[in-house]
Image 1 (cartoon, rainbow, N blue to C red):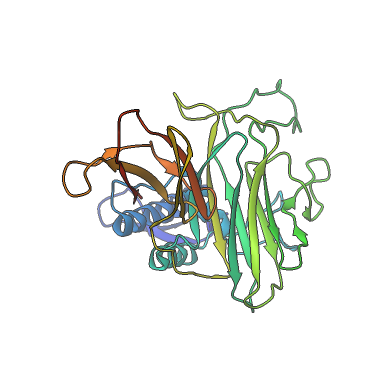
Image 2: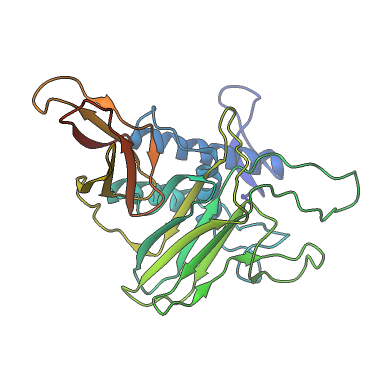
Length: 318
C-alpha cells in the first residue's frame, strides 16, 4: 500500500500547478515514483549494464514495507504493508557496501538444484528473508467471484534453519477465511514467500534455504529451459566479507576431465577461463555464466586430447 489521502503534489494544469487529491490518483504515482528512484539508485551504484530484476524491485518493496494491519504478516486488506522507500534505499546501499551481496541476491535456480547460504543474525531485531520470483504464466480459471484456484507454476519453498536446527516457515494466508491473521507453514499459492525470525540469537548462524517441489522448472525467459531466477532479500543480518576468489581445488577426475572448486558468494555470477600458455595469449571461456547457488562451486571440464598443459582461472562477471 501507499499513502493516497490528502496528498499535496504536482498536477497537470500547468508547469507550476499543485493541488491536494485523494485515492489512487496519488497513491499510484507515489508508488511508481518511489520505485523509479530505487531503480535510479541501483543503477548509480551498480551501473546501467547491471539492471535490477523486476522480481528484486517487487521483493524490495515487500521486504521493507511497514506493517499496516492489526496482525503481523501480510493480509488481504493491507497486503504486505505500507511502502517505505527510505528503508528500501538503505537496504540497496547496505547491500552494495557489503561487497558480498549480504542483503539482495539474484540467483538462477535450475531443476534438481537448491539455494543455500549462511547468515549471521545481528540480534536485537528480527531476522527476515524474502524470496520473490516472476512465475511463468499459469492457466486462468473461468470467470467467477473470488476464485481460489492455484495458479502457481514453479512452487519454491523458503525456509530459515536456526542454529539449533529448528525450521522457520513462511507466512500463509487463507483465501477462504480472508479476515484471519496470517499463520506460518508451507505456502503453495504465492510467488513471494517471507520468513521472519522474531527473536534471533545474537551472532547466531542461520541457514537460508530455497528448494522447489518437483524436479524440473518452467522457464519464464524466452529460450531458457528448466530454470527460475529468484530474488532473495535479507535484513537483520551482519554482512560478512566475501571469500578470496581463488581456485581451492583442482584435480583430474578422469583421463580427459578436470574438476575445479572455489569459494563463492551466492548471487554472484562466475565464469571459468583457460589458456595453454600461462604468460601469453588470450583467455578463452571454458564455461558459460555460472550463477552461484551455494557458498562453493564445483565444475567438471573436458580437456581435449593432445593438450599437455592448460591453465585455468575463475572470474567474477557480476
